Amino acid sequence: MYFSIVMDLHTRKIVGIEVSKKRNVDMMLNTIKKALTAHSEHCSKVFHSDRGIRYANHMVGDWLKDLGVEQSMSGKGNGYNNAHMESFFHTYKSEFYYTEPFRSFLEFKRKTTKYVRF
Image 1: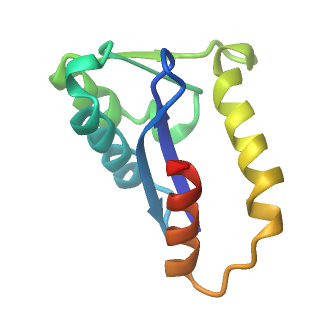
Image 2: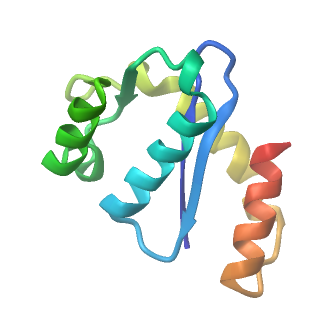
């Protein structure tokens, strides 16, 4: 079970979330689509991520370029550029994930989405 999020760095609000059984490019694209749809007029048109293979994939880069969104990635070994996301996932795991039992994928999806919206 996987989920990805897009955070607006100005407000620290989660503007896109996708929960999936597979961690792949489609999951990433769906998350970004949701973020752009939900936050289109306020979007800064810069998408920052770490250098993970799903973000560095040419399909993601080409798709962002076609939308007029600049892709930005942290330098190799530079975790500070992504500290806000690391902080979010640390809080998610310690406050929620490690304390909640999940009996199914649908329950994980429902509870995770509810937590993130909170």
